[in-house]
Image (cartoon, rainbow, N blue to C red; front, side):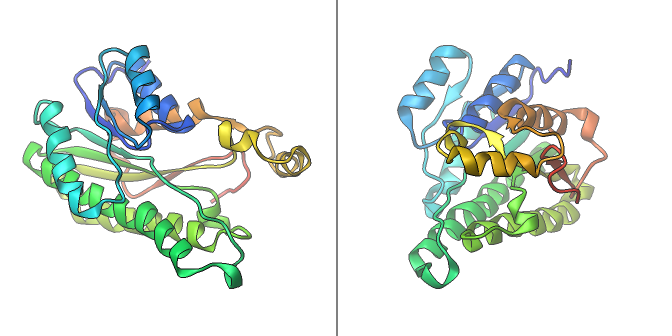
Length: 245
């Protein structure tokens, strides 16, 4: 088992299905975690379950407050930030000709711009520590496209390209920037999908099943560890063979 003892890690979107699983598995690996999100009740539940984690509610769409959040989070982690997991994201689906500017901007602003700003200010901390890791959670549809999700797919594809650029800029500073691209994962969100549509999705997955949130968490643990030190600017696809990039 990978040991992440003494690794200080921020996880955004920690109140969601994938986010909470990432927190759980990082905790089991010994990491020192600061979990953030907008659903305070869910964060409190995580805290009650994993008593040693730190929670700091925050809405990453507040761009002008991100630097302050990173400063506060870093202080809570002992002024030694090792890793940032950018997991938070939203969808506002619509067909392109019906999509209004608000639906476009909200998704781009939170999924892409907020991820950039979180990474930017985290990297500033990591430069002082002379090492660090950024792990960005993207999506299979950022590589394949998807009906009704031009905003979401653009934001996720943008994260991949941005991560490559960041990885080049800071590789010599011992900072790694990588992505994890989930396929269709069995969470509360996918439970709401019509059963026939879900069967149609599963039929296209070579492994014949939806993924689990822990599949994403396991990839996060690997990228957060020293075992991935020579991996930079890459995307790990966790999708059961749905997309072979």
